[in-house]
Image 1 (tube, rainbow, N blue to C red):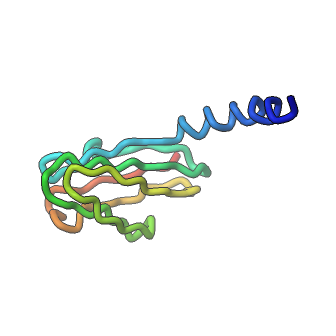
Image 2 (cartoon, rainbow, N blue to C red):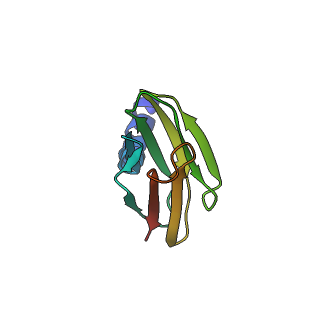
Image 3 (tube, rainbow, N blue to C red):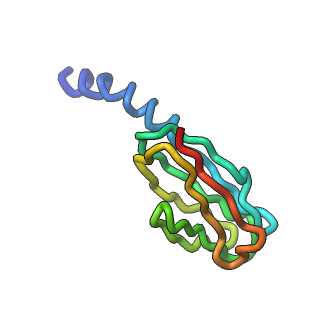
Length: 105
C-alpha cells in the first residue's frame, strides 16, 4: 500500500515532465520548427529526429551542446534550466540551411 501511495504521489511530476519534451525534426538539411519557445527556468528534453538519410549535428555554443544525429535516427538533447533569452543552434554539416533558435521566456 505504501508503494502504491508513493507511485500515485509521483504521477503529477511525471505528467509535468512529459510536458517539457519538444521535438526538433531535421528534414532536407533544415530544422523544423526553426524556432522553439520553452519556459525559462525549466529543464527540457529536446528530441532531435533526423529524417534525412545523412547525419547532421545539433550544435549550439550558447547551450554548450554538440551531438551528431545519424541519418534516420532520433537522439535526446537535455537542456536547461535556461535564463530568458535566445539560444541559436545550427547543423554543423549544413550550416547554411540548418539553423534555428530556442527562445526561453
